[in-house]
Length: 146
Image (cartoon, rainbow, N blue to C red; front, side, top):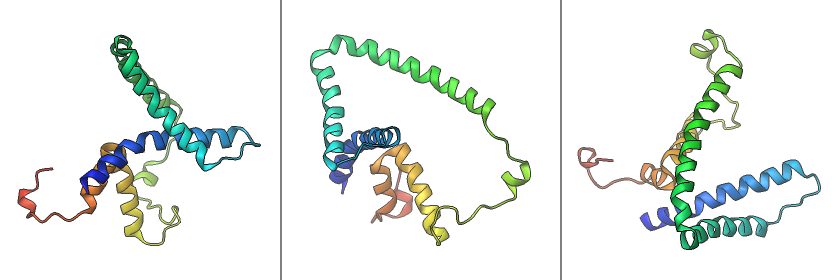
């Protein structure tokens, strides 16, 4: 099961980014008709770019990673400020007392809760975290350290 987690974890990044690119193309170009192989080609391109950078542009890689880290920090601060200033405000009564239910299309509250939890787990830990949540450990709970 762990090998499956590593394989899917390695494929998840390019798959998600390729699907986002295809979605943006569908959204912005009315005459675009997506084919399955478009996503596959985009995934291969997204895999080959870091491969070539690691192979031939190693001296540039450290400076690009530093610039990327600085941009991540700066754009995080800019995003938080923008969202805090421009976000719609809800009343405290809505935030703390109203319970919104049935907006996802799922009738079962447990399924809705589980899907929301797995989505956050995937974003934080990748597919490996979701697999660890779903499998049953043969060890007693006292021995599980993760």
